[in-house]
Image (tube, rainbow, N blue to C red; front, side, top):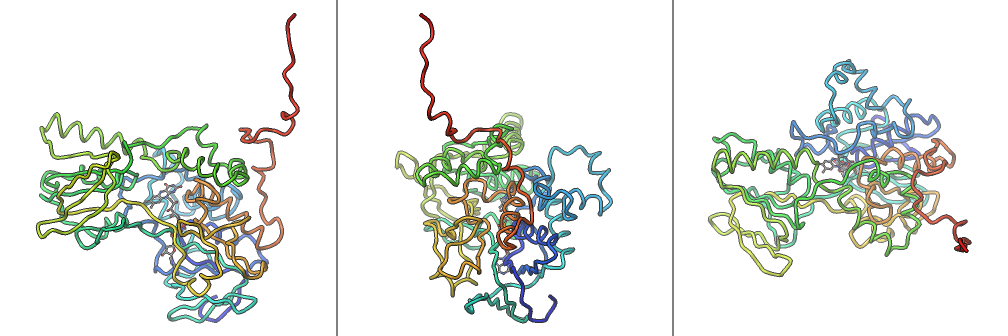
Length: 439
Ligand SMILES: Cc1cc2nc3c(=O)[nH]c(=O)nc-3n(C[C@H](O)[C@H](O)[C@H](O)COP(=O)(O)OP(=O)(O)OC[C@H]3O[C@@H](n4cnc5c(N)ncnc54)[C@H](O)[C@@H]3O)c2cc1C
């Protein structure tokens, strides 16, 4: 597309892994023109949390393309081969892949794809009646028949928390370079990001170590991820189909019961933390790490000497804690990006701020159906616990590409054979009646 104004079939906003998957699979469809725009000058995946020992929670085979088209050139395996490291990688016998390497894979795909445009933040989108017009700060407008919103989720800052250099969101951790040596540090949030930061702080040598470390979690314990082949059945197209057919009440129940299938601590991170805690307490006689589960932080306020953290326990008792540095590993929230503000009144939203999605990941809006707006990473409520995960990214891209081309650009074979798990009662069992046996 270069610098000329152009009209395309599909324009993607944001180049995280989800729109990158769409771009990689669109690359195999010759009669579909597409352009994808990323505001950053490089693709780097959650750079503020890319610790050297942080690993993927999912298999690298669930990459941008492999689950639906393993012969597509933008696979993780091809990245290894093209970069001359396949044999070295195999010899390392990694159980999983580092996030650093996966981020490098994503950047390799973004650099290689001709439809991607970096340093190209979309400032504004309007609808002309039969197409969308995308505006940028310093490049020509782009016109498109369809949109793919892949701008990710936004850091969630709890109410009554004022951020600043000494109180910031975990997504900024490695960018902030906080001076932690000899200071009181509090990490708020008992999920994987909180755990990785706690581990990083515990790994500091004595010279760089905080004076004290408090880990506060709203969860009633430090729960690890539920894993295994049977749990992974939730991360399949079959289950997604079943989830889509549930009533909203059943969906809410399913989301809550499956929470730790997708949102717990990686067991290796949890074990590493525990072993360091053991060594610290029993072999080095240091009593300077404090774990506070079951507390919801309701306020963080600077007090002149540091920060006061006020939390509330499940029995409603309040507690106050002092810290110098507060790191908010409080997760992310769905949000409609600012560039869609002109269309916001025409788009339906979920109570959590996500775009409300109908079939084929189409956002519900009052415009013509020939002009779909696809929502990626907006479907936690409407598509289930799997939606914010990499597991189904390629499958979702295939669904979207089939929809936008109006034909079967990619087979979705996984859903076309007998599923391993019968999620729904089968119709024929309805007529079953108990038969008396014996005399
Ligand atoms: C630390 C961390 C680790 C994770 N690890 C895993 C894992 O191991 N396995 C797993 O399944 N899931 C994991 N996840 C969850 C999920 O896979 C990721 O959050 C994933 O990055 C979501 O992809 P995305 O494309 O929706 O958004 P993002 O990766 O957030 O990308 C959105 C992109 O849009 C760009 N953008 C925003 N607005 C504009 C605009 N107006 N114009 C142009 N560009 C714009 C942003 O700059 C950004 O690059 C992890 C999440 C985090 C936070």
